[in-house]
Image (cartoon, rainbow, N blue to C red; front, side):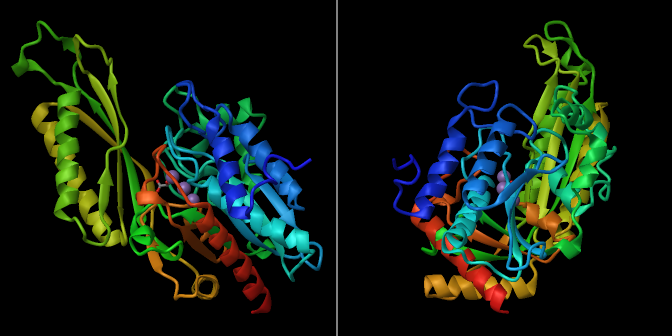
Length: 426
Ligand code: HGY
Ligand code: MN
Ligand code: MN
Ligand code: MN
């Protein structure tokens, strides 16, 4: 009996169908939205479904103590160091079906093709589905990637990672305990550099370049630097009907002025080194129609190809925030949450990936900088890393309209397969 997935003509079609299947089930309390926050509703069932596909591809699969799912396909010599493929299984709220998870599922197709041919290499192949890349639940991103790379406490997010809280006040430690894991156990997920020969992440481009040039895939030269902040504004709540305008310390009005100042500053640097700045989340208290807002928390995300421009903009924005707060008599607490330097991809892996892409596409690889952050930028602290980009329609991502073509995924699978053989022969 041909299974539901086997009827697909190609591996790319099956990979897309699998992403769709995992994207169909609503994973949040707003029914119908795709939202797979780390350790949230539906997270574990996603991880276990991916583990089944890893085993079907001839891999052993295990969940590490940070909740990541790891498949291993032994090399010619059991226990040999592994080339690690990976990406993330979590998603942003109301996100797309391919961001992250396609990189895991496409890698499973690569291993499945070797398994079917009984092809093995001087190194093992592993695939890791990271539990938390987006940071869509807690204020710091890539917590489970940091656990694997052994850098959980390396960046100072304003508190220890275990005490970070989600919007409901649940801490990382409590979320881990609810999943039968522990904050202390996260560190046990750390890998030794000696166990791995490199990390390669396939990911949708999340930008328009490949589509604009009619290319199915591209190679990443580096990942942009990013900094994130939480800004907490403390004004004075009051009666909407009786509080005179002149006497108000309206936290939301202050936030609004700050958000526009952030946008104007980023626009002033438009086009300089891929600079972008975003206020993606803003929460108001008490968030009631007839109460002058007393408190606001909003986030700032600033990125650029280099730390220089990024930090220029950050310093200007923080200065303006303080100035607006003073003028309005509002308390402003600025908490740094993320400070990720730009990360170059490993030149040797990059060259092999470029050669593989040229091989399967018949033309020189397009090399791009990634404005989006990826697990690869944390894994680069442990092992050499490289990334392959897959065209996504109109460059749309972090949006349910995210879409990929199965034939592009086939080409990506072909390039990764070619890359493994080149690495084995290098
Ligand atoms: O924010 C990012 O760049 C990624 O999607 N986590
Ligand atoms: Mn994302
Ligand atoms: Mn992603
Ligand atoms: Mn990623």
